[in-house]
Length: 228
Ligand SMILES: [Zn+2]
Image (cartoon, rainbow, N blue to C red; front, top):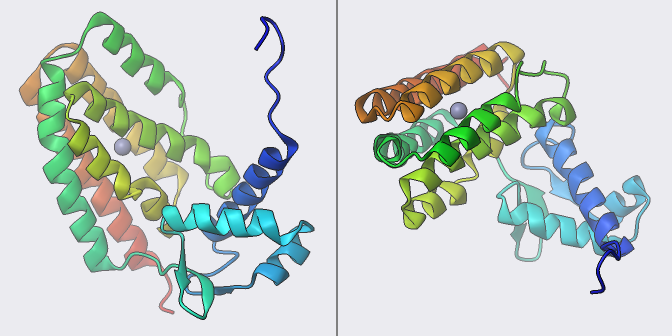
């Protein structure tokens, strides 16, 4: 490509991304409930687009486990995580992330320390719970932050195992409130201090503490839900 020529994103790609983002918001906000059948024709009418971008969006959402395609039935939204799955998911996160935080603390360069501080600075205050469009800023930060710690630890297999859970999406699909968001931001700051000061024990402890508190916040949110 000649120098200075703006990069053109094909219109079709923009439309496809837009439909994907719209459908994802509908699912994350519960406007399309869990276990709901997703009819491609209906959705394309509702979103005023052709069936192609809807089909593409549903396939992308399937890779994030927000939708599932069943033989002869088409797509439905997946169920929410239940209590046992939440506990299992956090057990896995403890196994992957606690030793990684410890290891990362022994490997943090000056540039890594800047990257950690910069990531923290993307959320000065956690957003309020005004729907997925608002609080996704926080979800995106949380996902990037945990990924960054795993990257610093340097075990690609561990990072991939973490990414495959899509845990941030599934945990925040259950609930989000601004208070738990700001608690998490404070816990991230404690972890950054431990990592930047190169203290493996403190980093291990802050990650363990953060995950335990985050798990308890999710479970408390589950208990506060009205019975179906
Ligand atoms: Zn976190």
